[in-house]
Each structure stands twice: as C-alpha cells, then as structure tokens.
Image (tube, rainbow, N blue to C red; front, side, top):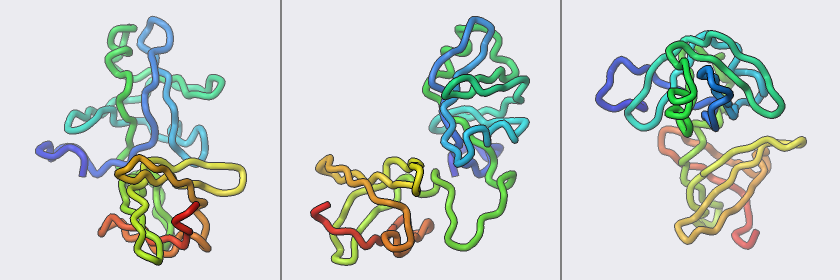
Length: 175
C-alpha cells in the first residue's frame, strides 16, 4: 500500500508523525493520531518514513511528555539523526492492529476519501480527522480550498467505501 516497489514493507496504518527532536541523544517528539493518546506505546516496533522510504525501528524507550510522546528508537542516536526524522510519519502494520467491527475505520483509512452529499455536491477530499469531546470530526477540502467540518456520526456519515475511496454524507452544501 505505501512503499511501491518495496515489497518488504507491510500494509501500514498511519498512527502519528515526528514533530521535532527532543534533546541531544536522538529522542523524538511524536504527535500521535490515535484514539487513545498513548496507543502507539502498545507496539514494540514502529515504521518511520514517508512516500516510498520506510524503515522498521525498535522502540527502545518511550513516555508521555505534556501533549506529545517522546521516544527513543533504535539507531537514532543523536540530535542530527533525530532532526532528519522531522516530518516523517509513524506507522504500524495493519496486521498488528485489532480487528475492526463493521462500519469502523482507522482515521488514516479515511484520509483522501472523496466526499459528496446526497445532492451529489462535491465537498472535496478528507484531509484530516480529529476527536472532540462529543464525537470525531472529518475535515473535507475542495479543489477551491473551501473546508467543511462534519461530525462523524451516523446521522451525517451515510456510506463509507474505502475501496472506492468515497464517502456519502447528509450535509447541506451551505454549511
């Protein structure tokens, strides 16, 4: 799915991203994109990369620090190596994740889906999903740059087809 041309990379699910180095010993600040803030800490190895460049790294140590995770990964041993990771995504193999129930999706599976309403108005593609206290919210952005925020609730999200990369919503085009 991710590393075209590199058959050794498994089907990965994005779980966060590296936002900055932390200290001088190769630690990284990670912004998790998981339902449970420390959900990434359940995995002993992570895949780090972007585009076609991915590598598997063992988690040596990790902890919660304020609003980020800080982690020490194998072979990233100084600030320069950590800085080179800035902006890379953190993923885990789909096979290692819990099985989903019907009509459940990982956030990373929703990113990029084309969103239309029942009147066939094109809302663009999903660029982000985030949690609020009440429910998750999807952010769709059109080609013109207009962004729409829609609650991820059964009354609004009518149909999700990950294979076709589409989502049908009950949402007024004027919102």
